Length: 101
Image 1 (cartoon, rainbow, N blue to C red):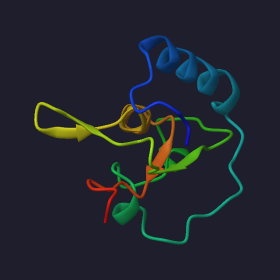
Image 2 (cartoon, rainbow, N blue to C red):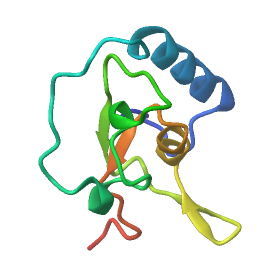
Image 3 (cartoon, rainbow, N blue to C red):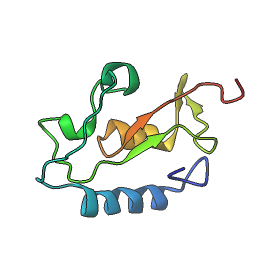
Image 4 (cartoon, rainbow, N blue to C red):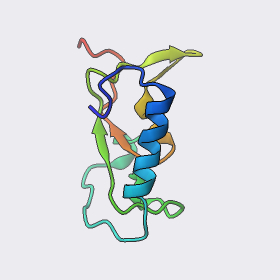
């Protein structure tokens, strides 16, 4: 779990993004390879370090966990990790709408 709380505070989310920007962004190449189909596993269809418009030195991968229970927001199920994922800071995968199954 990246966050222990289901709904981290805005300050916690802000500090998390600040830390990721400081320590994970940069021009150095990433030397790992994803062998699965990113289009099936990641909302954006690719891992963040393969995005030509984004410079990642140290990729973070986070799997959907029991503390990432998304809440409904306008009909969409969204967790804090969804925000980090769509902003290209975290590679979030394994999302499940129902964690009981």
